[in-house]
Length: 213
Image 1 (cartoon, rainbow, N blue to C red):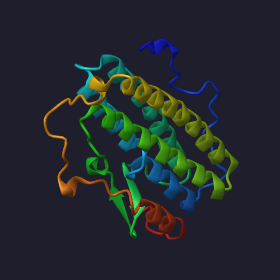
Image 2 (image 1 turned 180 degrees about the horizontal axis):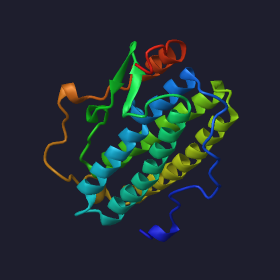
Image 3 (image 1 turned 60 degrees about the horizontal axis):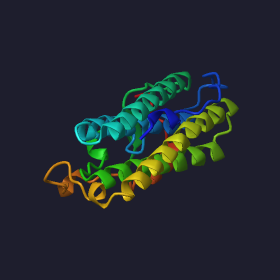
Image 4 (image 1 turned 90 degrees about the horizontal axis):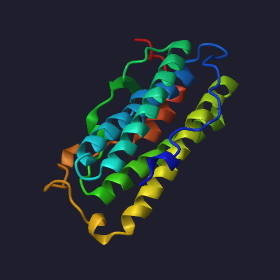
C-alpha cells in the first residue's frame, strides 16, 4: 500500500473557532461530539487500539489508523474550544437522561479480525458524518455550521481510505480471514450504547438546564 497516495485530511482551510454567543442547546450538541458514544473521543481511542492491534501483522494499515487518529485528535480539540465559547465545560462527557455522563471505553466495539476491524472503523466514520450533518441542519450559528462541515470533510477522507483498505483486503481471501488473536467475542455487557444516543441528544437540545452543574 502506497500511503503517500492517501489523503488523511481535507485541504480546505479551517474556519475560525468562534460563535455568535453562548448557547446551552448548541453546547449540549458539541459536548456530545466530544464525549458521547458517537464522538471524537470514541474514534481516537478506537484508532489507537486498532493501530496497536494491527501493527505487527498489517503495518501499513496500522499506520493509516495512527494518522487518522491524529486528525481525530484535532477534531476533539476544536470541539473542546468551541464548547468553552458556548459556555460548557469540555470534559469527556455529554448530556444524557437529565444529567452529565462521562465517556466510557465501553462505547466502542473491539473486533479483532482484520476485515471486521476496518469495517467497524468505517461504520464509525459514517455514523459521525450522519451526526454532524444532522447538527448542521438545526444549528443556526454559521460559525458552528462551518466547523461541522470542515470536520465532516475530514471524515469523508477517512471513509475513502477505509473503503480503499477493505477493497485491498478483499483481493486476498487469506488476509480477509486472518485473525489477530484468538477471542473475537465481546462480553454482552461490553456492547456499545449507541442506540439511545440520538434520542439523548434530542433531549439535550430541549433540556440543558444542568449543563453547567
